[in-house]
Length: 164
Image 1: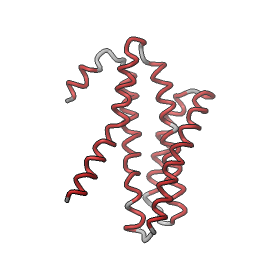
Image 2: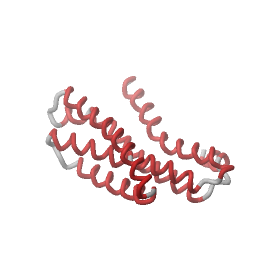
Image 3: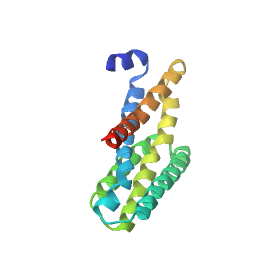
Image 4: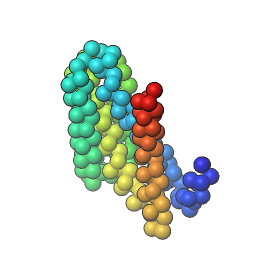
């Protein structure tokens, strides 16, 4: 599989591979948050409606992060946003493991997704900077592959769990 991918994306600059790996790392952390709906009411005695509210904060954080990330990329450039997004979302995600109060879980879920999704517009701007015009479609495809890799496996795993 790795040979197939490397042949399909041959000719792409090294910077594009680094951006794709960074996107893979960024999205792998977001994939973990999809299980947030299960954890609060199973282990911390929250109600289903509270877990649903936390998932709503997940979506709102994603919306806010993408919007703010796009505005910040226009003002200060993509590189500081790429770095700060990865660092801040990692700090928020680690902090999320140590809280058990509903307010803090909700706030940190919002912050994890908002800081994590600031990465996406910055990554898109960096693709247009580092990609050669003849390899631009391949660069976008590689980035989308990195962005969606963990979510496909997550769906498959959920279907296997439902069958058992």
